[in-house]
Amino acid sequence: MRVDVAFSPAGLASQDVAGRPAFVIDVLRATTTICAALHHGARSVVPCATPEDAVRLAQTVGAEVVLAGEKHCLPIPGFHLGNSPREMTPERVKGRIVALATTNGTRALLAVATAAHVYPVSVANFTLAARRAHELLQGGGDLLVVCAGRENAFGLDDAYVAGRLLREALGGRTGRSGLNDAAIACLQLVRTYRERWDRPLRLSRAGRELQKVGLADDIADAARLDAYPVLPYLHDRRLTVPSAA
Amino acid sequence: MRVDVAFSPAGLASQDVAGRPAFVIDVLRATTTICAALHHGARSVVPCATPEDAVRLAQTVGAEVVLAGEKHCLPIPGFHLGNSPREMTPERVKGRIVALATTNGTRALLAVATAAHVYPVSVANFTLAARRAHELLQGGGDLLVVCAGRENAFGLDDAYVAGRLLREALGGRTGRSGLNDAAIACLQLVRTYRERWDRPLRLSRAGRELQKVGLADDIADAARLDAYPVLPYLHDRRLTVPSAA
Image 1 (tube, rainbow over the protein chains, first blue to last red):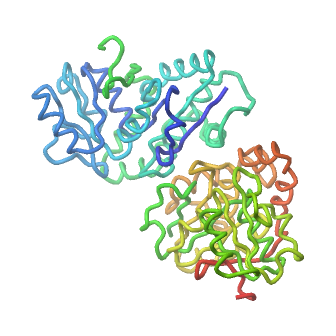
Image 2: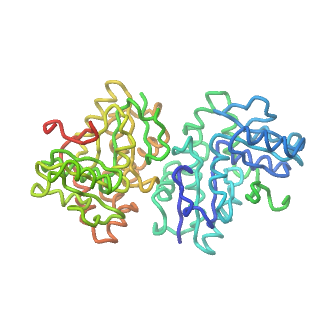
């Protein structure tokens, strides 16, 4: 068994990623927003490294593209939507392609594009993601969990969700062999914050910054267990859910 | 007050570092080894990014240079010493310049070369380092703690020592405002492992790899509180202790 957690995509080497199943977490807010969009009927979500990439996609594909994203937590001028899960209503996204450009989350997804499978994880799709992680550990025993973090640094919110994911994936297993140091530390964070999804989310810098710009409701939304129960996966540079693939 | 912990030098931006006081931790083993060498009378320790850099230094400066370091925990062929604190005996290092090339620690020191002050931290010089960190927080209130980590990833050993350092630096202060997410997580690790320096050191991947190659004694040495009580600082690309400067 091999379980590695990376607290940010910075420093991930290609051999850490290639061919492994990867779970990507940016709970505040990109992976929550992705689940919200797909749960509400978006055809796909395309993670874009920059707002310019998103605009280029819209120019190529046309009117069915919805431009969404953020820079420093705030909406991007000229974009249809921000990076809030609450904006991904059926009215806005159903049947559309969401081109999503965010500071950390979409870049983390792109950083693991060479993985065997890529699944975005949030509280909103936690049970499905945890079940998949558990199956993979049972089957082959290899797992990479990549936290988006904040500008290549550790984020408490993502690390806590990673710990919860690992705890479920490991089932009753208590040994620490095969776990990297970040995986061990994540599991300790779960012991600290216990079952309270919202506490580490609010305490994290990402959470504090959202509160500062009046987006505290996004934290509450991101802390709702299984609110957007889909398990998207990345293929051909876009995220879809199996039924919509 | 601003207290930032970086779990590895990867992703540190120049504005995170420049002009701030920085404490660098690679407890297994570079910063412990640096303290051992200077405590035992080395004139200075020069952190080198690569073994080749160390050799070049020796070629330039001459016979007073001792070549020391490791690659994948093991001594470098042709070097006088490895990266073990136990090798830094007075017989080997007294009056000499130690050119030290290690995988993670010396690179972390070089990554913060633009900081206002750079102090290596280990268990072996913990009390002196913690006192200095506390003074700095009292005075101006800005602190950067950089863990060397392992190949740009999180290391449990360094993170635990960072948590101990912060706990002392903060004194009785319990609020979390001004702390980045990694600083908060470090302090939680201290709650988990409590006062046992050796436990997180042995459990970390760095510790497990040392045990695998028969260097478990280095872990025991690195876990001895204040065994090498010096507070080296970096200036002109070398580490010295004030009395030997």
